[in-house]
Image (cartoon, rainbow, N blue to C red; front, side, top):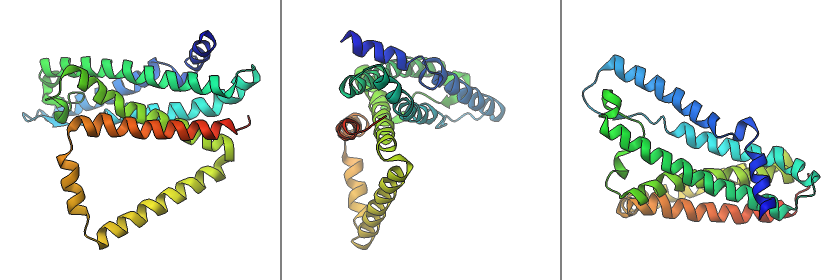
Length: 229
């Protein structure tokens, strides 16, 4: 266990995976949006979408950790299992801590009337009816999904290089494109939208993201077991 924790600590030492950098980027995004809202002085609240920068950064950081730290870790006689356990554990802890911070910021945002300018940055409307625990997990669930998506793609690029990644991406686009065409021909988009709207918010923000993250984690580990530095 101590070895796994040490590996996770080492992963946090690189700039791309540091704790401060994603929040600095998010703060910059928020500052830009605050300036825009202050200039517009609109009395109606509006959601900015700037929070997505954090989720994108988490994805990129997870991908880069696998690409940069995997060869280094194996060079220190770290097993693939220990490396993956440390990487996955860091992703889970990161998602929960980040989710807690986002929840606190959302509560502050609501208490200040959208930072005084009616801006919705953290306090997402569709999460406002949930309790504190579910709200925290609703922030954390998609973060966990983005982390394991980054880990999965990182393992693909280490195992098969850019060619393998492009092949998997092309295959995914073909499957998704084919599915879209089929749903259009069969007129399934309406029922699908109805089904989505009927799902509880927690299912969409916690259940499905965590399920997909678990599948990506399993796939990533299977690929990593056969990957060479």
